[in-house]
Length: 202
Image (cartoon, rainbow, N blue to C red; front, top):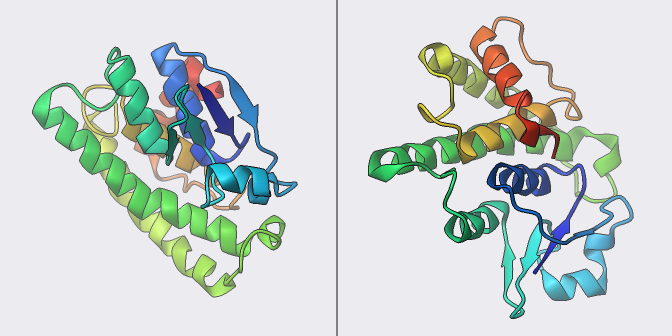
């Protein structure tokens, strides 16, 4: 199998962190997003949506979307479980990962895609949409800060894919030029702990 990876881009990083937590190492082919390699005819033949990451299995099966790729590896190597332990925790992990994706990760992404000068060649930028998403980021961070008051991890008692998604989103705030408010002390504590994990450097 082979993983087509996009370097510093957040979605490929989610998969790399997941693989590191699982102790898995697979062949990786770097796709140069800055050089628009993801828009080449060769890569478009693999993924018509021209997005990374992409996992190609030995039988030629193509799996795109970072969470779908992570679910494949979860089934391949169930330990440690990163999508929850048992019905309740699995549901909570799914709930929180979706909350983080829809309300935080996607909002940070919109700010970056629609306001950062480096994205002009890749996106049809609508600066007003980027600006409109800035308060959405802060609103969700305020909620998350309250939720993390009494627990170590995003979805409960164990590290999960929700923590990976949130960690990547927080780190993505830097290139999006979104500062983390000082008063969100619970997020800062959580972030420091997540950043200490060996997988965070993947």
